[in-house]
Image 1 (cartoon, helix red, strand yellow):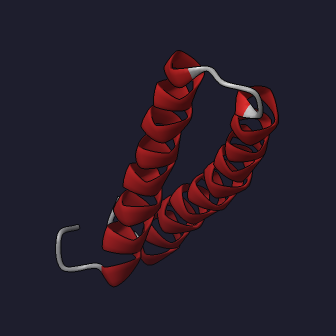
Image 2 (cartoon, rainbow, N blue to C red):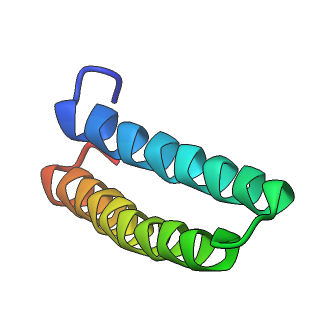
Length: 70
């Protein structure tokens, strides 16, 4: 599994989602005039990144099952 580049791509996508989530939560704490708009945009980025991460994970699982490695 660790030799599979798709595994590492999926893991990187998950870490990206985590990073965006942490950035967005930190933005909520700062407040300010445009904080609501910025936080909303960051959370939209998170949803997009999360979609990509889920698709990569499902693709990884599907390929592993098809090759009999799972």
